[in-house]
Length: 143
Image 1: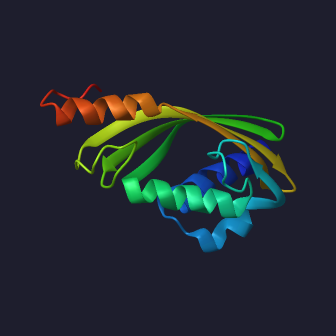
Image 2 (image 1 turned 120 degrees about the vertical axis):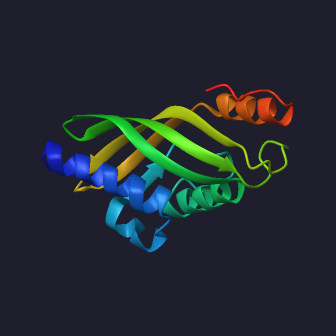
């Protein structure tokens, strides 16, 4: 696939799977040998584990991920992302607060045969926690 096709694949994956949770489309985005290296311990590292993680995240937050920068080289892509979250359920021991928070992170993708074969992520969870705690303590959220 060319750079433009790879960019379209990654953008559609973030929108359809993470933002809209259209899990019936996972097979369109994930290679049969897909491995996710960023899931919590104990979760399967395949598409089922990815779906479980997104569903678990959805129990804690209404979330929307935006790609702010996408770098593609051959069959590899790095996406700088910005996550807009509303804290709607328990997370890290913090009860739902309704707090709107923003954090950033990176997602790394390896592509093969027009689909994602490997994924890694680094998301700034500490910023999420700090913003929730700041609002809970009557302070203005750090943004």
